[in-house]
Image (cartoon, rainbow, N blue to C red; front, top):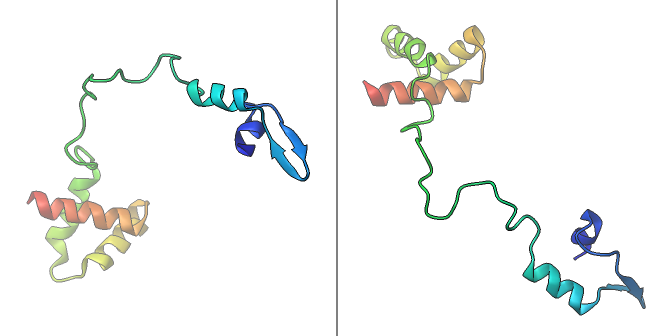
Length: 107
C-alpha cells in the first residue's frame, strides 16, 4: 500500500498511532480498477504472438565465425575457444560459448 501511495495510485493516507491507514473505499476502488487496465495497447487475449525465432542466435552472423573456429580448433576446450573469440571479436566469453554450442548443434 505504501508503494502505491508513493507512486501516486493512492492518497498519502493517515498516520494513526504510528500506523498508516487508508479509507476502505479507496483500497477497494484501487483493487477493482487496477492501474493500466483498459488503456489499450498490447496483444489482445487470444491473438497469436507473431513470428518468433526458433533459437535466440538464429541468423546471427557470428555463427559462421564460431563454426570456423570450431573447425580449426582441434581438441581445444570450448571455454578456451570462446575466450579467444571474445578477445578477438568482442562480446563475452559466455556468449561465444553459447554460439559455439549452437554451432555444434547445427552441424
